[in-house]
Image (cartoon, rainbow, N blue to C red):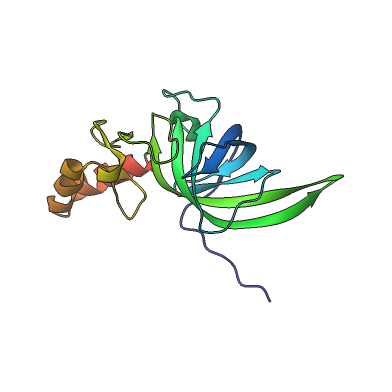
Amino acid sequence: MSALIKRAYSRNAYEAPIMFANYDTENYYHAKMYNSSLGGMYLESDQGIKQKSDICIKMVNYTPDTPGPEAYKAYRAKVKWCKKIDKSETSCYGIGIQYLAKSHTVYGGNVHGLTCSCDLCGEKVPSGEILESEDFVCLCINCFNYLEELPESKIKESIKEFLIGNVI
């Protein structure tokens, strides 16, 4: 009997062209995202990549005012797994990644002065100053501290639900 795998976040089917590169290079490769979740995405590429690698992902069809992964221009991520798969007459790699940060600016290796946007206030701050909550919400230090200091209440719960996208 196979064990059921419980995922931290549900996956949403979402096909989009992307580009990715190792974090310390500017050599981007074409790929296609097939699904995403609050914590990461699944993509396929002709190029394999080592597990645990830090990568930069560019969203080819960046559209900032829409929901979904294309609302951000770029992601910094960690490769959780990479497997060679055979599709009809070709072979490619299936890659599972976990988001580390998201941004409205493009990551390009270790670019000095790179900024990210806080998910709560929208303030752009250096990427090294963005803090990630347990729900993969990226916050500036002020918003992170604000949420931490807020007493447990319906308001705090509503703010967290809004930030992770669980608003009905």
